[in-house]
Image 1 (cartoon, rainbow, N blue to C red):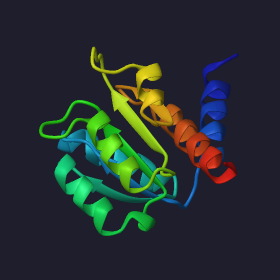
Image 2: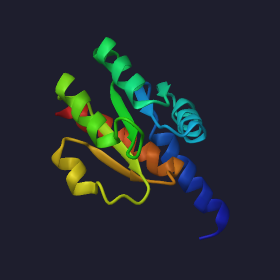
Image 3: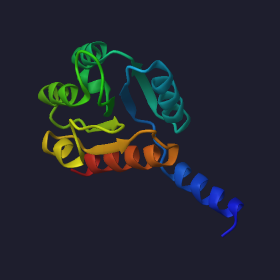
Length: 144
């Protein structure tokens, strides 16, 4: 397989994994939050970006029905991603949550699933992986 056909396949996968749902994105690293927000916006999603987990929790508490998915970094000051997931799930137990993390001793895929997290992405997040995981988690939430 040559390079151009690999790129075409990747682009087709990314195009297939688009949507219009509303996503709350939380990452304390401004550059990461902006990049992930741009990726999701270009895929068609309505994205609310928060760089502080307390702000994200307050935004969710104010209007929990306005979000279809929450994507959170794991390692953040004040409220970590797993703590944020527990808080959000206590408000709306049906909201799908994705956790993004680099190396973490605090949490792995199995631990994330035990607290109700529906997806787990390793950093650095790749556009195609994010697009596929977001679409998969949203579709599973609709069908449950």
